[in-house]
Amino acid sequence: MDVVKKKKKHGLTLSKNTILGASGAALLVVLALWANSSASSVSVARGDILVDAVKQGDLAVTIDGFGTLKSNKQQLITSFSRATVKEIVLKPGATVHADSVIVQLENPELQQRYESAQRDLSQSTANLRQLKLNQQREKLNEAGTLAQINANYETASLKRAAEEKLYEKGIFSKLTFQQTLLNEKQFKKRIEILRQRIAQLKLVHQEAVNIAQDRIVQQQGLVDIAKARLDKLTVRAGFDGVLQRLSVELGQSLSAGQEVALIGSVTDLIALIRVPQSQAQQIMIGQTTIIDTRRDKIEGVVSRIDPIVADNTVEVEIALPKSLPASARPMLSIDGVITADTLTNVHYIQRPANVKANSTLSLYRINNKSQQALLVPIKLGRQAGRFIEIVSGAKLNEKFIVSDLSTFKTTNDTLNIKS
Image 1 (tube, rainbow, N blue to C red):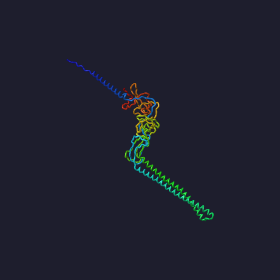
Image 2: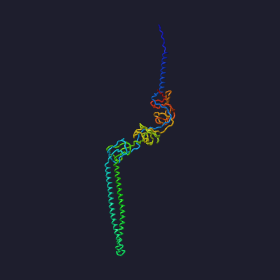
Image 3: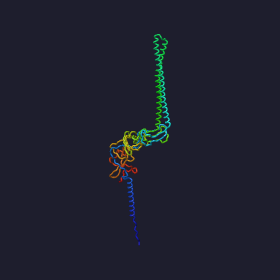
Image 4: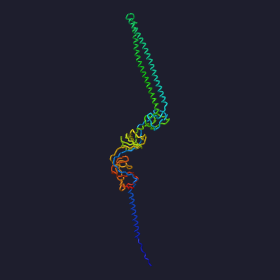
């Protein structure tokens, strides 16, 4: 018996393959769309970003710096002559007064010079006394001679008067009388000469005394110099302050002019702070500055701007008030904030990371309704501490992401914010 074989139909098989192919294609399309969507959208957690709102008002343009407090009055003490450190009385950090002894030096040669100068002074003084005694003896001799000649003159005058009467009566010879007259005149002339000699002798004596006294004055000066050099071996502070540096050791040999110590004032202080070179042009003499000692804040005024640039910074000197808190001490590390200008009624925001003043950049502006952030261009103005002026591109109370987003390698205009 013949069996009729039915021919197999392939339509159903083709239909299933088509469906499978279409499904795979659709899946690929979905995956491609999802991948494209993921590539064009970046999400960040709200807690991982820093957000600040645009504010309006007056903004102080400040420049931050760092530095130290230093004594406004300092005195460097050096060795006046060659010497050896015999004793160290005070050490760095000690409070000193003008007559406080810091170091005791020693130099036997200066001691010998002082003693020698004193002996010479004593000898000069003794020579003056001897001179005055000799002059007194000469005066007495001259006075005795004058008295003797006066006596002779008076005797000659009496003799002349007696012989004159006899001569007038013709009893006494003319020749003898003439000899008596001549003798009287000679004594009178000698008296005049001797008086002139005595007067001249007084001048000579006085000049000799003056010369001797000048020698004594000169010798006294040498003694004073030797004494001053000897006194300088006792090193004193010179004014009230603090011993900031001691540069010698016990037994050390010092040469003339070598540093011994540095004294600085304690209450009379200045602040030296360094500011960035890029901001130094905004600083002017007289600007207000706040100095932070970590415990107190002191208001000062810019008094000097160093023209030299070192390590891309400029040193600025700040004058401080006379009355300072106890925390202010020399060599104390401080921070300083200089108020360079005040921006009146401007829009400003916290300065975004790695942003410079007077620049244009794009920031993500947050839309609170959609929890998305849209990238918008912002034009910035002057920097004021941790804030920066907004010239255009933002309105009051609008919120922007100001944290560093450089870790997100994307250029998308939209940023999703997750709660």
